[in-house]
Length: 256
Image 1 (spheres, helix red, strand yellow):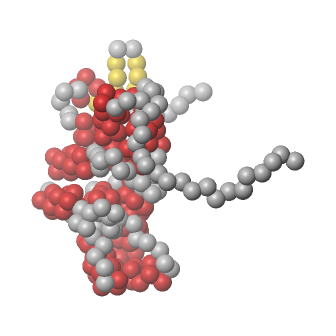
Image 2 (tube, one colour):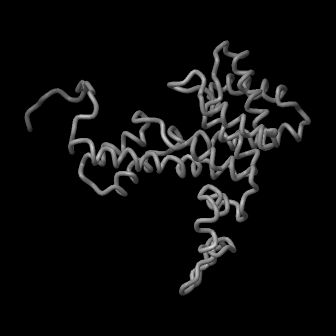
Image 3 (cartoon, helix red, strand yellow):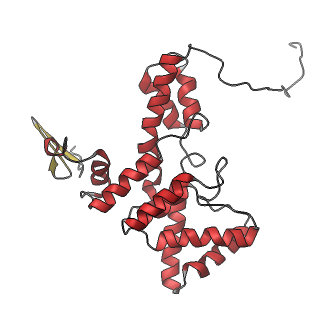
């Protein structure tokens, strides 16, 4: 049974990825551009290539507090190989950690389709979206942050998107939602890095189902650094966290 794949042709002494010989790519095309090639099938324009590099860098690390860093360091302290500990961190990436890019991109892409169909402005649509979310007690992903009141990565990414001519309807809608949330709740829920990336990759034409991929591709580098640091600076099985756990199960009892 033969598979069909558009990614890489493998023959003796010959590798062709998305139509390009790998030896031609090596040392010539930057890694983020090759990632773009794998995901889109063509090499990026200089503008999209620079934006791709910026997105991956923005995802690279957020200290020791995220679940992925905690998982990688905890597993590393058990004495496993580096790939195993990094994989543990990758396994913790889901809807609540790193997933807002995917969900946010889906939300924005569907929103822009609706906006164009109904001939609305981003401001008009955002008011309706925020009102709907409030009535249904749903959170709009990509806004607010547990640490930052103004995510420093967001403004840099949006500035680059403007400078590179990438900013379009999705970024405009995300900014309009940010303002609508302020008017609706009276609270400032700024666009976080996940929301910014969701808007930017949507304006770049990426399928929302690749949202987690951008986070994953950037964060693996940070997780590798955390695992290496844990293995080379810390003692195995060290006490990393102080957690008071109160037992509230069945009272002590004798076997029948």
